[in-house]
Length: 133
Figure (cartoon, rainbow, N blue to C red):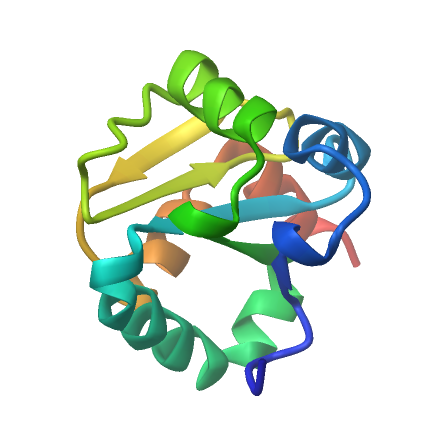
């Protein structure tokens, strides 16, 4: 894929998206990136911006999962539509998921990484992490 190691593609996994997110709960934050095939430039733009801030991703325990519409299995698509309110006609959608498994923020266009970090750094659990020696 050519991007940071923290970026995953569900297409390469044997597990469902729901199972992957469940495993990460309580340990990692997740940024889910979804793009339609005809709008992959949004995902590439976002991934490149995130790749430039790999140290910040690591520091914030943030994994990035890339979802391309044509590679999604139907159960994963249904899960996104039901639990994340995905509209399959959207060109780009992203969800910031906290360590508690809850959606903290939803985006319809690529996110400025500094804004993303500011949001994460304002979360109570992140503030606790930063205060520990």
